[in-house]
Length: 471
Image 1 (spheres, rainbow, N blue to C red):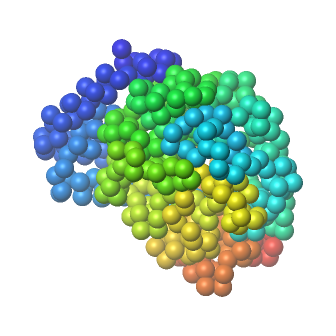
Image 2: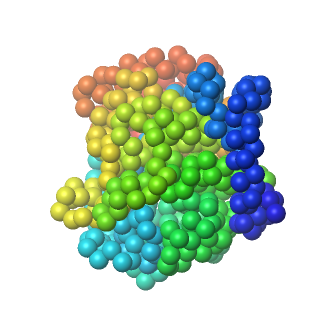
């Protein structure tokens, strides 16, 4: 029985409710009067339900689809402006005891190079990331209680935060590790993590169990209920995601929105981020064996509708996608992107060329400087800001500011300050020239005169050598 307030996975992600939703969407996909009313409702910036959203996804009318894209772009501007937050993944270990059939880390893969970073190797990785200009990381590790126990993750987080190299510093560490206990989530919170990220992979329970035939990840309920345990452990920023291509995308879309609705209903706070990875080629993995791959056009529509239906959430797109796709979907709602990513263990310090330990093939191989340059030429502000996390604006406090669209008063100046740091410390001459012009122009878009004056003052101090200011 469907119940968004339930703490049982099969009740807040109810299979029959999804089937009923898809049937309703099919019956109403050509009901243009209903579609128009839903688009009007979405303009109120309160989001849409999973059932309403599924009608829009099923609708194939070209004019309405264009209106969905235009609305998504406007909602992105209303909530997040033209800022794009930058981050990089850091792979600590690819040892894993699970049997996930879509991931090369699976236990039976005997020809992938297994590697676990020592703390000294982590220091080298983080130094290399700092030398690029990164300030925000998402650490990744396979599930292996012997090789990757929670103590190793905690020690690694401490190491990452401790490294100060030249003007570099990692100011926020997000964590993407396997579902764990309330006690371990509490330890992660105490270690100072930002967002806890866990991809569902698929919300279809039968498919989930087939795709995860062995290992602790086989337990659908334990995995799906992880965010509730994380929040019980004090982590108030959590990130959802499915791996599009494993199951039918309409089913996954409904399940993803139901999960967001569940978090709102139970905890009063929806997901801080939603990621939209698509399955990609990797060692020992051929994505074509999965029958549910989606076109770039459908992918763009999914991104637009997530933005419309969960307007407050941050949306993440990684270097799984090529530059053309990233260019298309950024305007439709994406607010965070990775840059210069390596998906191999030790890939930043050694270039990742000697060993085959990647989780997936990267499709955007540009340097961070090239990505920053590209974003600015497109009119976006690359932001290295981590201020909200460090100022305690997380969970319901962040959401309140975001939903009231007051977050601009913090994010806009913080984006400019962190971009200024990047330009001085790391940018190429061409990128620096573009960036200085962008900052000058964007200062005029800060509506509060006192904030504008203070931001101008701090930009001058950064020019003189000071660092790490925040609103």
